[in-house]
Length: 174
Image (tube, rainbow, N blue to C red; front, side, top):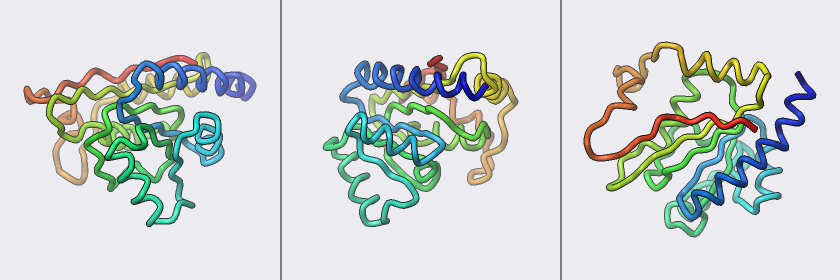
């Protein structure tokens, strides 16, 4: 399986390239599990990176530039999972994660912030024929868990209130 994941990385980067081109210049958040991949994507695609090593002041500056559109794409590991409000973000590309439904919902929440006329899309890019693919399917099929911050079911994130359009999360195979 390690070999499949290694080959999957190259495939994921090809899918990432295609998705960034398809959605340019939409504000896009790219999530990955480890800092090494964050830095590789930042270097290969010339995208600003935010990790737990990024000083707080620099994080704020990068996010402000993202909000204004100066930086249309930002790549991060866990740092943007919680407590960040970027309603300008409409596309999320998840290249890897822990498999936790909570993390998945948190990352989805980054792009579900209200903004008039917004169309939010989440892509999850997984390596075929690996445990990563099985975890993704299992997490997406499991029943929603309560959102502890609001005491409302996580499934309410998908509710149609008539104002914003949300497309169902899409899985891309790399």
